[in-house]
Length: 400
Image (cartoon, rainbow, N blue to C red; front, side):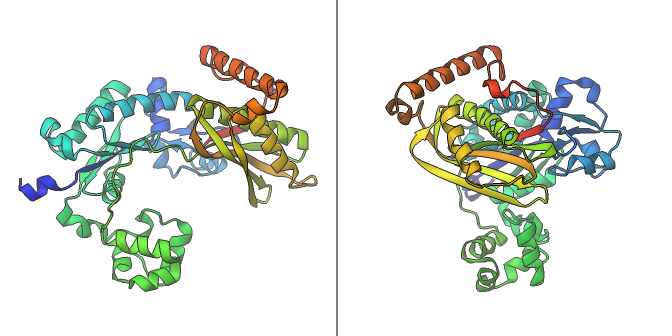
């Protein structure tokens, strides 16, 4: 192996295979060999599907009703976020055993820079093999690994290695691998951008590479045009970012039946605040920007947000902002399909300075919140809840 090749970055993108479904199968062996779809409720969406279900046409983010039509014999199970988060923690610890340079992207995927680990643990493919073996033996699930000298190519490689495989793209083979791929494979190209590119006759990443930079900028805007031009030539200079702080914490809920009653909608918004703010405090974070999302029966979606002067973390304080945002919409019996809450503009902190300034009422809320958190840690989520949330809800939900 040449000295020049030794100096090249070796980036791994490790991605669990059908993570939520795999965890469900691991915990319930009777699901093995059957089509499994994660997601519940008549009007929710698919959170994950195993490869048997995918072969029947089921895909993530697909409406569950459509998934049931495509796979009528599939087994549908609810999302277990606490269990998924627990397994994710174990997986990230495995990654850390091979390199401290780990950048989690979500619960089930991460970038690893193993350039400095090769003398101890072997080549990129050897490290990938060790990681895959440990994940399968210790956690009972499989993963796929892409290996390259940049994050962009490593992530693409892991996609084409699925399921349960490894694909390495050497630096001198990047364009050979990259240019035949469809434009939709490009990182950051969603359906809207893909349509815009196809309108000007661009079908492959190679087509993008041959297009003048200024043409891309004119069609897509300065930032997107510049980025796609660079990526189309395999140029990605981003490094691993460790322990990147959460950009937002939130939750949303799709109702089985459209709601138009303000009290019911506010109760569901409170439920979202309770779930999100607990996660916020559990990570010792505070928020200064709170947003709500409302989707109507015709699928029209609006969002509103407010940035407060001092950071918040308590259920009641966050809910008061959410309530004010919702009431300001002045909806008159509008039928609502989905509501969501997002806590944004996050920073480290253990409490709200505002709570200390506003007197005994706020002090009481703070003490109540601390007591609820303590009970939750001891007895589990939902063991102590606001009185308004004690009624049973048939709605399905998903956390972001």
